[in-house]
Length: 228
Image (cartoon, rainbow, N blue to C red):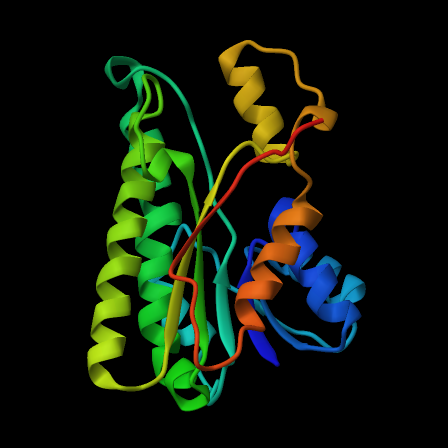
């Protein structure tokens, strides 16, 4: 299986990359800088690592040029800044919309011919915030509500086109990642990774989605911490 993955530098993206690499799948990884690309190249021997900053979506098509077949594209990267809308700087709003929504949409558009060629799967890591918007989550939730719309629309388009492309949204609860630690800091709460689901558990769910028989698909899946 050949998989293009964003966010492989930490958290869930890293767990997915680890799992795919361990079983011998081919990886195409996007890194936001040459330094990060070097780190990923060292960690994932044989991976096709390309420099592409999701904060500059206008450059993504060039970054993924030349890929003629992809079994999957997994959108695992994201950013978050919490706070009341009245206090959110414009940069915080636009950064979240750009990285969490515009970049995945553009990257999907740019790689869709390669995914169609393989009859592949597009996986969007979404959030419970993409289903319900709570106070102080406005900008992040807006980006995730939009991402859900992209996924739902794309699924209908590709079903109608008969290309065999599957589209899955994964709605995450609280997962023990660096982003979750940042969320706790912004909420003013103590953080204990042991309270939450592991990135490896989420990665196992994503691999299950990718490995499904061709005659079935999971359109939406919610992953939340289990009992401790």
